Length: 254
Ligand SMILES: [Zn+2]
Image (cartoon, rainbow, N blue to C red; front, side, top):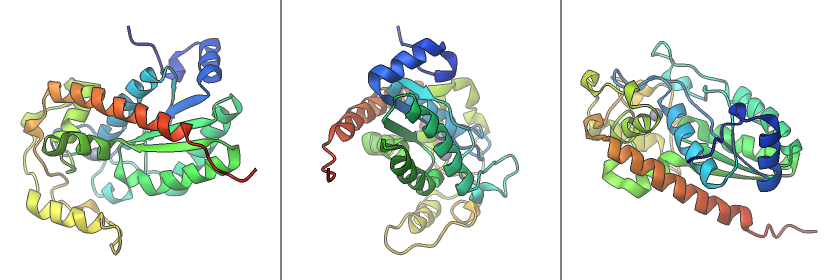
């Protein structure tokens, strides 16, 4: 049987014991933003939470709750999409980590799915590490999923990978029959690549710049089997890599 890891569902003495024995906590920042007519607004939050839950089970520790909302200013032209300012997102993470660090955790593992969170999450991680004398490790679970599953899990928006990601959380939230009017995958891939360049790149203002209809990809390719494989393999990968990173000698001066 899988152990309960959601901190808010545990009794206090059990949470305390888990934190003291592992000194580790898993956190999954979310995002609430449009994912086309066939996936829920909470797609990225549900994806991160589902994988993070499996990671916390593998590491026998707790999954600490964070707001479902992340940093998604460029989806605001689709009503219902929500965003925190990067400063707010960072402040919330700092406050939560302050508590957890006082409760014995000195290893904090962030399992993120939403690309828009990444710059702010790095800043938050750096700040938390300096303020609370902890080690922070970030796992970008969408990139890991694409790396492990390739064409079956493309880095589109609301395509096969994200449809499978929602299926691993709750298949009843997916309705592929409603997946009409995708943007051209060739055009959207090309534009997404421009904003994902590592050397010279513009800042994304509005997701219309990538996909005029809000989404692109192949949701019809997602299956429950793929969803289960993603949860299994990606959580295994993250748990193993995180243990290596937390175990490194810091080589800091005495
Ligand atoms: Zn997404």
